[in-house]
Image (cartoon, rainbow, N blue to C red; front, side, top):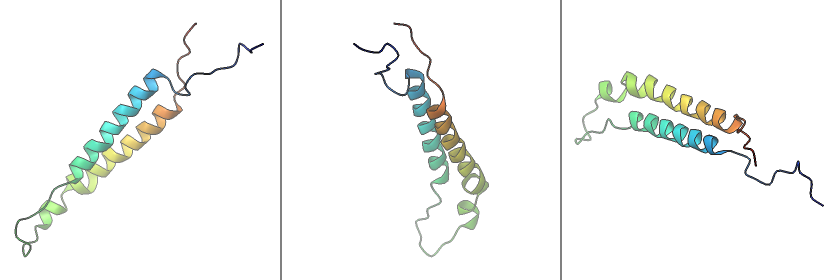
Length: 83
C-alpha cells in the first residue's frame, strides 16, 4: 500500500529551472562585463581601461545579483500541480 502524500517528483519545478537559467545568464553577463582591457604592446599599461567603473563596480554588482537570483530560484517553492 502506497502513501498518497509521498512525492516522487523533482525537488524543483519547471519555473525554478527557468529562473536558474536566467540567473546563470545574468552571471555570464557580469563576467563578460568584467573581461577586456588587453593591449597589444606589453610595455603599455592603460590604467583607465583596466580600472574602469564597469570592471571595478558594475560587473561585480551584476554577478552578485546573479548569485542572489540563483539562491532565490532554488529557494522558491514550486507550484504544486494537480494530478
